[in-house]
Image (cartoon, rainbow, N blue to C red; front, side, top):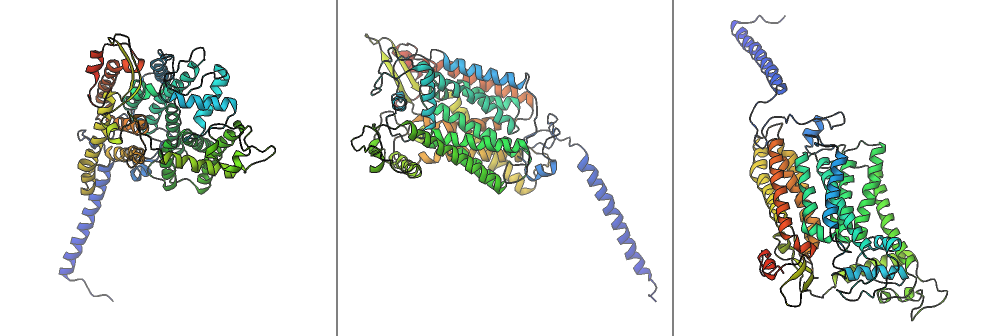
Length: 550
């Protein structure tokens, strides 16, 4: 038998029972408070769940979102005032109007048009040539030439050569179409990231009126194609990461992501950063994929699709160039023996196999790119792009008595330049001075929007830096148009910052001010886009950097 309880024991047991009852009441109270809406005021991580959020039937579960605040598909905070398709058409139409206005002027070869049109001519007549860039952009121009322009007639040896009766406008319109698509695609990227309509419109409208994007989209150049495919790669990747495993939607966007990434690299290798980031996020499963990293089978399939597409471009390249041309010297002795009309041509000689030619040509492209030593008057450094310190003079015409001047001068829209850099710096300040201290000290509210802002911002900031890195140590001359991919991520950072504003009314106000600043700057410096005739003094006061600007 157990011993009888003593009075002192009864007191201890009573205390334990009361403590247990108190703890149970506290747990119930804590549980009720967790379910009760928070009424604290809004300020950055504010504490309240945004009433404009709509989780929707396909949104990622809140349990996973607490673990991964940027998980896709993102919750939409608001809806556009007009149907999305109408808004996209409006953005595309506005961008095309800005780019197409007077696109046939000047009626002469401008800057790098001389190279790309010479390459198209070589394709047209089947004469082998060499270029440091992959073939896709030039193959697109070849298709347009065959459809709309007829046989090339000019030599394309010098800048300023008049086109005469050569049809050239369709080639410029090709750049305009690719460049115009960048605006609606950028808007869709913002929405896929979970940004509000006013925030997503920010970078979209900026690409409608930014001088760097507009000028590169009005001439026979490749950067408009590069930017379009690069943006599509990111858009399709975001949709891929938000799709459930094993669904047709996921397989569809897996294929589209691989193709668009390969297409971007197939235009210029400088697009590699975005497909590279997409591959890393897909491999590690953070921060965006809703169900973790992609399966190994999906990764292998995407890689095979991308490699096959990129390789097929070179197969078409070799097929279209059976005759000897200016690029013979860059290839092997055996390859030159297979070129019809060459000094070393041997009839019936098959030449090296495609695989050997493919790897050899890509190696030569890399080597030639790395060993470019020619300097240029209008070359610029990466740090000058960030502050818009130095542009690039494409066209300059002065009348006989030097009283009127026409220029096409490449700059970044000054408002876009200042605001995008300010957004990047603001992100770093909020990250290190507000978000991380609150997170480490345990003062971050469960409903805070700062974690999602920080994760998106880190991805965008990484995209900005990675696109700049190749130009920091490069020895060859570089130009302002190389800043387009970093600018793409900087403008998305502007959208991410606008989205952090307390409510939609404030976001609409800030976005409207941003639109106004961008349009005013566009209007002031638009003569440098359209080569408007101005007096020397009118050009002079537009030169914000006296030494760096033309």
